[in-house]
Image 1 (tube, helix red, strand yellow):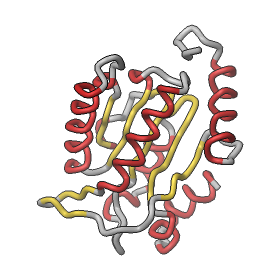
Image 2 (image 1 turned 180 degrees about the vertical axis):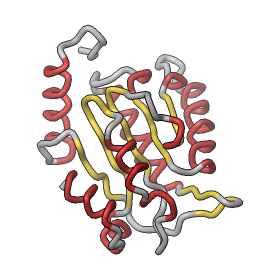
Image 3 (image 1 turned 30 degrees about the vertical axis):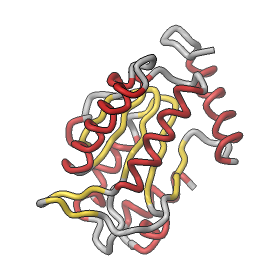
Length: 178
């Protein structure tokens, strides 16, 4: 059965945790999805990474198909303009290829634009895989990213990349989710 706005919040959280246990072998609603390391793509002054987009879009499809969320209750959150633009295109293509689902209602936000918004499920695409984490290591941005999901938070990133950085905000994030 599809979770709807009238559903009990505790029930939503429990159903998502149960699904996460089945799918990811973790009893949590805050999960890191490790994407194998590959080089990010620099587009102008921004960054994109196709590996993360594939994982995020697959997760979005699975959550909707499992009846855990309606597309409108999912937010894809990114820190970089290039990746955000590609998500907008990807969601448009998905809406054309699967017209029976309202894929165009999945909201994609850049991290600096989500302040004051939240969603049942937030999928945070970290994008960066290189030696520099850029402005994504800023505590305020990570705090905003982690606090927007009411029932679920997924961090899509290269765990190898995150672990190599010693920046304290990244360490706090990894400790919180682990």
